[in-house]
Length: 263
Image (cartoon, rainbow, N blue to C red; front, side, top):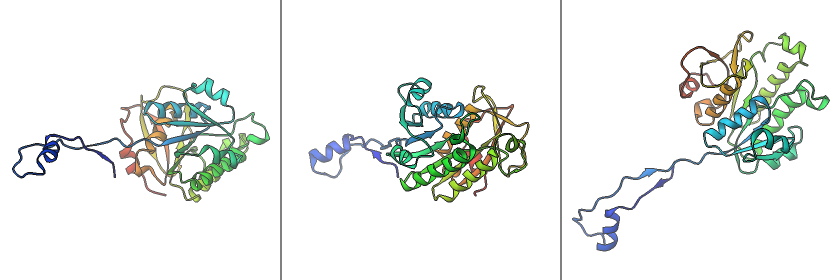
């Protein structure tokens, strides 16, 4: 329940002065609810193309942000010195636990990169990293976990698996690990990612992972959906795909979350 901030009016003053005398004509101001404080959000993959836009959207909406990064100097350069950075690695459980102090929600936008070497494979990052963060977040009492995954994760013969070390197979295993951790989760599966401006198109929400090619969405809109999921209980414990089409941009995604089937 939200806390109420009561402003004393003339009625309160007269009670103090007259000892609750009946017949007082004093009035009382209407109580107004105070705004709920926004939770501290830990963003994994915060210096990546999508993660940095997630951070920007969180800042735009007034969320306190902590970036979970391997390189704090890179974080300061890319995100700005005002963003708190916690050094760590998704493969290091101790560093994850240390970064979760005071955190109310996590958004995981991390993904394996092509030239990251043996320590940055899809198995290590998209699966084990997602699992490690979920397990640590659940143990720390974090309220919600938002995972950026991908369309096509249920298609084992997808061409991306042949090109990038079974990346979609490992992403699906990461999804399963997050769902099994016990934490409330939201799993977002975007289509092909673009770098255009967000908030310019209609975002389409789907379920079933029935198609993956020729469907696109700007990273900034992925960030908008991820941050919106923190505000709507209807987004919890749901898995869905998103892409963008020409049309009026939604001001709020609450109705889209409501229409989704739960996992």
